[in-house]
Length: 148
Image 1 (cartoon, rainbow, N blue to C red):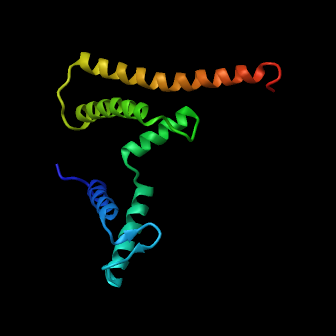
Image 2 (image 1 turned 135 degrees about the vertical axis):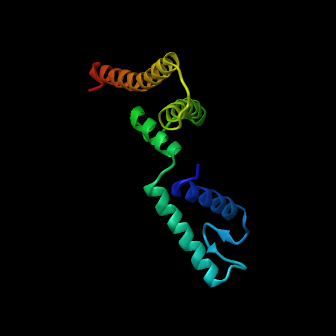
Image 3 (image 1 turned 30 degrees about the horizontal axis):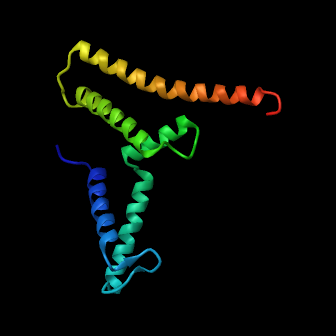
């Protein structure tokens, strides 16, 4: 299967950001400098602008998932990274399974499919119920005397 445009742009972005962090020709305060001449500096700046623009329009699946979890949590703080990584790994496994079955001809049995659906439902319910429980606890605290 040939990778799509988004995947190819992400490949370029990964290399660009990695090399930018390692070079002595760039600093956050001074931008591109050193042995980088003006024409190269212009294309590097344009490339970075393009990658930033592309990322804003086509965020990576992991970034979209992180934002969804933050919305479910009702906080801009997000989850601690170890907790996020556990949830991300679970979500990715489920996503890969359903993508494989629905789009790529992955063989599956009715029982496997039912188990996959049950796992997804449990995962989503835990996210949504936790948020609901948290909101209920906050409401209860606000109703206590002296907290209004």
